[in-house]
Structure formats: structure tokens, C-alpha cells
Length: 331
Image (cartoon, rainbow, N blue to C red; front, side, top):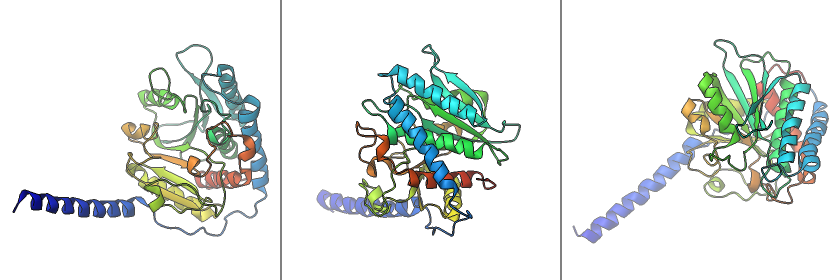
């Protein structure tokens, strides 16, 4: 057999193997379909109140405070102070994990129910800074607003796991050592041996455009629906089981459609930034959001303002998450 024929045959086998591998990967990463069932809530009366609170938080962060990052340190500190104040108002035990750069800036840590021996921690995280040049409504005031409202809704405690919130700076630009503010606190938690079982990282949550298409890149456009009305859950392969459990809880509530994917870290949207930072601790991470830039093109830009947020859709998603985290929740 000539070298040319060997090369052609090898190329064909590689192509066939690649297609088969992609097909298997697609099947293995897409979570099973699940219909949105009848709502478990007796009424939707709580959603308008949640909607108003979310809107107040987003406007405070993105309009009253505005751009908040190292280029605007006073505003960054104001955002930190506001987050701590709101957690305290919700009745949570709150502390600041201060950076070593001086001043009072740091990550806000708030806890529902004190962790005790044998009790694992559910960590819920969000970034309170904004990208450079952006007021940061969608990215990421919506995530912070969701964290604050989840804290209020879940504050009565009684959950199977201790619930801890980590709302941090340096989510959109790195610290001097190249890491994020989130990693700063995660390293400290790891050194203490904190039993973190799972992290829910809240991402952009303000875009709900129903049947309007979104600009999905490859490989997502071969897997996800084009519409813009679902809550998106994604994580690494290690997150598949808890991701499926969360998706089923959300679907059974019937408030919002849910799509979920557990895939390899090299896929865009799963491994970028520090979203798999807990893997070295053995704890999976699930990113919870609305698909971000793919659905809201202005996210993280100069036009990312509070007026562009769909607060009604955001309220549905936040209440659904609260019900999924705390099944005995009383709204």
C-alpha cells in the first residue's frame, strides 16, 4: 500500500472517529429533556414584589453607583458596602474577606445556618464589579441582585445544606496576581477545610426575550434551542448529577423553562474565566444564567443599562431558583 493510500485511509478513520466522538459527546452532555410542569405555587402574587426588589438592586448598582472597577475605586467600594448592607438587612451573618491591597475592599461573605460537623455547604457566588467602560446592569448587577434576593427568600433557614453567599470583586478583570476575587476567597475556604459540596455561580440573568433567536456560537448552536426564554445551567462533566437534579427541581416548579449541559472545560462558556476553579477541591460548579452576550448583545458594554433588563422574567427565574434550593420555602 502506498504512502498516499495510507494517508487517505488514516484521514478517513480520523474523520469518522471525530464525527462519532462529537455525536457521542453531544448525546452525553445534553441533559435529558423535561417538560415544564404545572406550577407548584398557588399564585404568582410573590413575583411582582420580587421583581420590584430586583429592579431596585440593579438600579442602585448600575445607575446610582455605575461603573465599578479599579478605574472607579470609590464606586467599587460603594458596591461592596451596598452588598454587605443588604445581606445584613436580610438577617444573614456577614463578613468581609478583605484583600491584601489595603482599605476596606473585599469579598462579601454571608451565611444562612452555621455549618456544623457533617453538614455540607452550598455556595452561591456572583461578581459585584462591572467591566471597564460599562455601567454593568446585565453584567453583572443582575447576578448580584439575584444573590441578594435569594438571601432574603431563603433567610429563614432549615435547608438540607448550609447556604453561603460569596459576592466578590475582580470578576471581570484580574487581580495583580492574575486571579479573580472569587479565587481569593475559595483558597481561604479550602485552607480551612470548609465542606463545600456544590457552587452555583450566578451569571447574567436579565434577558428573557421569548421566541426571539439568540446568537449561539458553535457548538452550542447544535445543541441548545435558539429561543431566548429559558434558564441555562452549565458545568463540567463532574457537575452532571447535581445539574440534572437542579434542572428537575426547576422544571417541576413550572415557573421557567430550563436547559442544561455538562461538558468539557474547553467549550466556550464552561471553562473560561475561573468557572471550574472548584474542581481542584473536588466540588462541582454550575453556572446559572440566561446565556449572556448570546441573548443580550449590550451586556458588559456602555449601553448595558438598567432599562434594558426584563425584570419580570428575572423575577420568575429567581423565585424558581429559591424554590429549587429550599423546597420548604414560604414566599
